[in-house]
Image 1 (cartoon, one colour):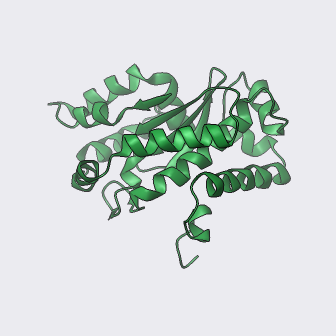
Image 2 (spheres, rainbow, N blue to C red; image 1 turned 135 degrees about the horizontal axis):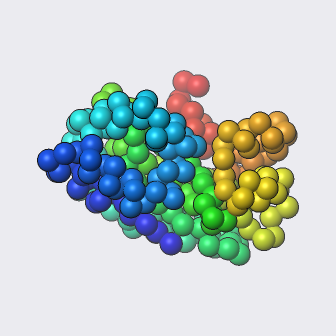
Length: 221
């Protein structure tokens, strides 16, 4: 299932009190956005969260708005999710969230209540680096690559047919993905295999990109 949170986020930027509007938005989607914060940013209840929110609310979003006018990101996302599910022979649901983050990960995976979730943060896919949003300037065309990558992770953690050690660890954590716990519990071998599988999946679902793009590197790396 595709969930598009971008319009709701942009609406917070039109509020008279942007910080309050963001907190209301966060509360409405607490299970997923809370997991995003906990795994990829920091504890949203921490006092350190407020400066991050304030920066995100004040940032210039003209690059994002321009990209959304020029690119049908919903169509790209729906197609990538469908192709990933078909090619990977998904036997359980995975939700895909289109969202605007606070400058942390460009994409990621979550498990909330036993349900696999992939997300992409569009501030990173405007084609222009943005120092105010910490946007990486990735091309919008790369969305399909990253969606496939994260869907592969989510399926590996939740599919009833998955034999991955990561699936067992997620189950032991109450059917919740905790990147800090996983990083300390998983072996180096499992972590390498986990990324390798996701990269191979993205190459199959979204062919035609440069090798370094599948690894999340820039050209010089």
